[in-house]
Length: 367
Ligand code: SF4
Image 1 (cartoon, protein in one colour):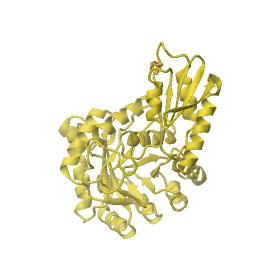
Image 2 (image 1 turned 60 degrees about the horizontal axis):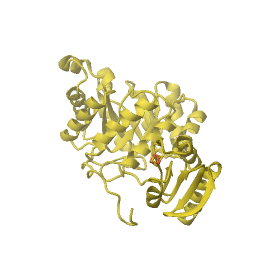
Image 3 (image 1 turned 180 degrees about the vertical axis):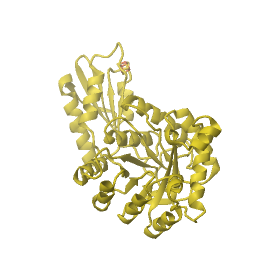
Image 4 (image 1 turned 135 degrees about the horizontal axis):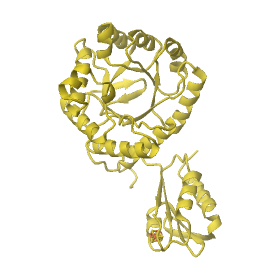
């Protein structure tokens, strides 16, 4: 777009209360952030920090680590201290780990006060400790662990049931004057999930963490998450997102960032405009698009690269892009800012595009 003109978005953000997860602000005053969760044994400090470093490099804003045992709780001080991004400890049931995580310097704790209240009512002390340390909380309501009472009342995990549970959990902190929390109401069905967040958004000004839980393997999970997050973010609902995939967490981060970029909620970086190919194509468009994507991964300047199978739409798309190729007769016409700068044999298309991209990036000030 034009320099200085903000890219258009589908809706203004829903106004929320603002909280902080360490250095990352969460709420309508701040950009939508991307989260993921480590898959390592938290107690294994080095391996966990290594995975956090990979997530950070991929653009993750906030990372969550599970804390199911004392060994994991003991690892939290080192992890919190050495992670480059804020760390959230994920805790179920045990209040002692919540206090440990707060003491350890974790930026936030994911815990449901309803659970704590059931076993050992220390909600008030948790609210106080969190306040004293500047630690925020996520209340994470999940269809799979919905309160029995609500399951009986609603028959199953309906949007209304999820929201009633969330509002009740929120009230357990609010009655102690604690408001530094965000809420999630996750379900594996995007339709139920979207409805639940819509209802929750009407009910209070809490900042919201979006997630489709147990979304599945990479392909299905990506589509379920993109569909559900798109439906909500296009209404301005959602302040931080976590894509759940049965795949390495770096993949979750890439998908999350791509969803935000697609909606102009985050500046677009590398964008590949490639055609689907058709009977006119005289080169292998899929292979070309994959190789160009792989070759340019990690570009930090905004760059549109058109990869087109023939000259029908090639020159048009290439003109709109910073860089492009239109192929034909085993050759590729390389476009820079809409002008043909050279024609190369098919085997040299990828390397030429990468070369030109690097040159453009340098001109744009990439270090
Ligand atoms: Fe087909 Fe050419 Fe369009 Fe690609 S650019 S889809 S090859 S007409």
